[in-house]
Length: 253
Image (cartoon, rainbow, N blue to C red; front, side, top):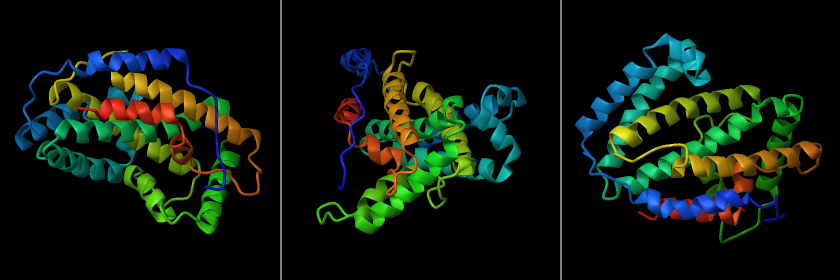
């Protein structure tokens, strides 16, 4: 890689949170991993969130799905199929947590950019990321880790991967991730029988990721006209050892 990005240390409280994960991860009851239970729990979630107009006032993603029937239809088809695949594998808990981690990354990367702090610099940040990824594609020279392989990590988790970075893409990615996150949280409780709360592993990792991505955007915003641009925020986050260690801890099931 032609550059090294370092954006400060994560707060001490986050590292303390990592130490809490061992205790949290042990609090599992026996789940019922069947395709029938997936369908049942997804139906319950759909009736609770998507069939009640009032939730659009609380969740922007729900409001977008109520307007965009195409997105709603695609999600209703895709999500339960993905969950059915997960529960039929030899280690469903590992795969489910991996999916949650991917969801957190997409949700945070896009929701943070939609915050008021970046309103006036959002377009410049998006243009800088587009320029940065083009630069990487033209200059990447690592035979042990090809550019296409690196990009596959982003393509795997983004719903609108083929679209260039812009306000519309950010809104769509954020909306999809928010709705998916609500469904995953429901499955976490009612299908995987995990205990959840304000200090569970999901919340701890999300907070840490928000801190880091926020710093990354501030760095990009400080010099958006950089000729070679800046890489995708996920690319930047993959250079942070603390976040990678947290992922490993969460997935050590």
